[in-house]
Image 1 (spheres, rainbow, N blue to C red):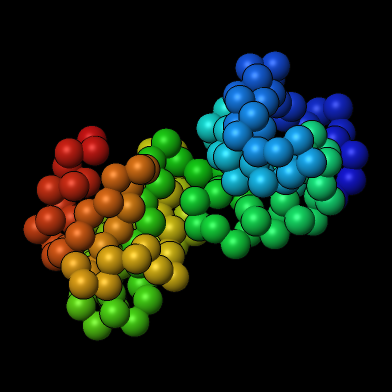
Image 2 (tube, one colour):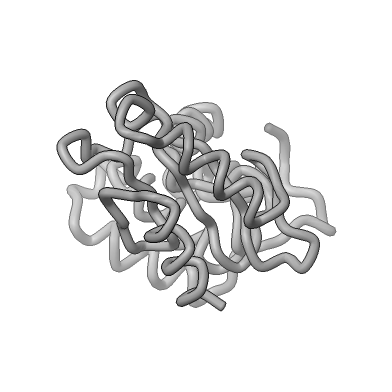
Length: 165
C-alpha cells in the first residue's frame, strides 16, 4: 500500500473528527487501538474500504498500513470492494450448513440472480458468504445491514427480501 493517489477517495474532516472522538477512548500512545472504529468510520463515509483509504487510516493512527489491512481483511464487516446498498451476509459454516444454510444460499442466489461476492444489476443487493456469524443454536442465519435474522427457511428469506424492497 503506497501513498494515496490524488484521484483516490479521501476522508473528510468530519470523518477525522469522528476518528478523533474514538481516539480519546485510548491512551495517546495506543492510537492503533481505534483501528476497528476508524475503519468503520471510513467505510461509513465511502461505502467500502479501498486499500488507499485503509492506508490513510493507518497513517492517521501511526501504524503500518499492512496492520490496518490485516484487520480489514480479517473481519467480515469490512467491505474491500464496492457493495450494493444492502449487503446480505449468509453464514455457511458447518452448523448453519447442517441446519439449512445450503438451501438458503441456493434460494437467495435464485431470488437475487447473483452468486456470493456479486451485486445485483440494479446495485441494490450484494450477497456475501460468512464463515461464522455466531448463532449456531439458531442456525441458519444471515445478516442484512446491521440486522440479524435466524432460523431461516425459504419463507422467512422471502419475507425478509420483500420487506427490503
